[in-house]
Length: 211
Image 1 (cartoon, rainbow, N blue to C red):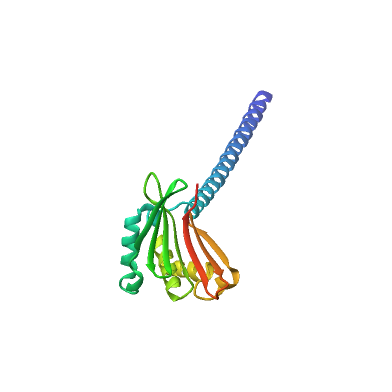
Image 2: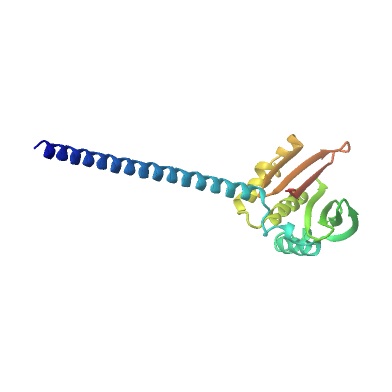
């Protein structure tokens, strides 16, 4: 009788221990699942952050930094010929070596010029600028340069860069003198320089950021 009681008690404790082991295993699996889920969330957040960072610092293929000087002039003509034909032709003036690049100077009108630097090895554009006496034409040409630079941008984004960030056409650049903005690995800059003669010069440039 005592032996039977001992056996029953032993079986009872074995059952209890088995249940406890099962519970521990379930809890352990649950904890592991939560850890894996949290790790997955962290990894996804990190990947998303990396993608956003890449988007902000990497120059895309739909930019002037993927073309040469001749193609730049052709695209400039195509962009402006239908709306502002008198500003659509860039006439070559000078080509000369610069620091690790070739400088191409072109003229649009008597007081409006374009300067483009191309990589000495690849021939692709690395810097472009519109320079001219402050008037409607230089603002139009500057806006065209910005529109031409990155064709992946929406019309709204291009307008935002022109008006809000560089202050062209709304008088902001005349007050601030220098304004710049970086997006998608490209730096956009406007510089307003008053002169003693009453006229002012506006320079609007785009440059590929160095990695």
